Image (cartoon, rainbow, N blue to C red; front, side, top):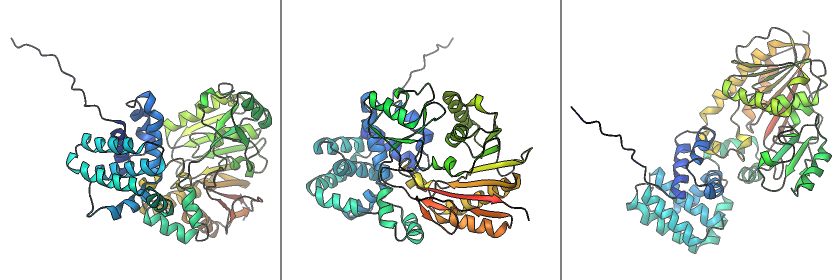
Length: 440
């Protein structure tokens, strides 16, 4: 009779914080988005280290190509080793962009190189980091001078935005502000600013959005006044302009196409007395966020809401729609400050595929709109192919489409629509074009 031996759990050897950061950097290089794994990854990080982990990971991604450009001259020959290259970039980032002590930055990064299986190359990492530590100012100047973008993206932005290119490159490396949208069905913006002041939280009103507030210090969102009571949502200032651009929609049937996670869905209900709102998205899991947000904001009872998981390229409405808000799938290059992994994940080939997808959704959605109704086309991209040029093609192919000029001081007027670029202390890159359906 054979004996059953108990299974033995082999414990993975523990690695230091820098090695954990490098593992995340490698996952992004392999095509994984932070959104897909970061929450799980943070479970393996000690509570006391989570803030530093975040800073090192996001900071490295934000400056990835700038770090790469200044490290290349330091190598006698290419490493051709993503792990060691990531260790190198992480070490240089610590030396040039954080207040971490020099000896700690170097020793912890060299240890990480060894722990990740490349002890033979740890001497190279050590030597390069020590040189950077001796010539900090020169390397810091070089880091700040680098545009910090993949070459294909830099060339496209140079073509699209030649006058804004230098500032745009700088802005895309900044950290975006944390912005709230006050639920004005519950509380006024001035009243909420007073609530924040009473809680000793520094904040200021947005300059463009009538409902926006920028927080000027780090906070835990669920601990802010009125979170459970639905007094506010987290939403970028430039994204908040969508509902403000639209003409009056009271008693209208409105479709929020590509709705998840529901920021614009909620804002539409907060601003207008709608006859009905339909929230459409292909991602059923992300649509759960729409339901959760509407519940917390206590908006469900204000108008009938229909939430549908389906493909916007084929969906057919059972009724003519008065208004369609189409926040189209895009390369999301305008929100790289908030999602710095986009810098590594996007490829030049993505643009053509995205433009085609947008075109298909536009064509299908336009058929659902009644004559006299309006469509607001939105992207969070800064590429003209997805924005102005997409609209030029749309108007050329749809004789029943008439642009409604957006009367605003913000953004840059395009042949069609207006483009917002990321701005320090303000919102991300967004494009808006308002279209009315005409009888032909």
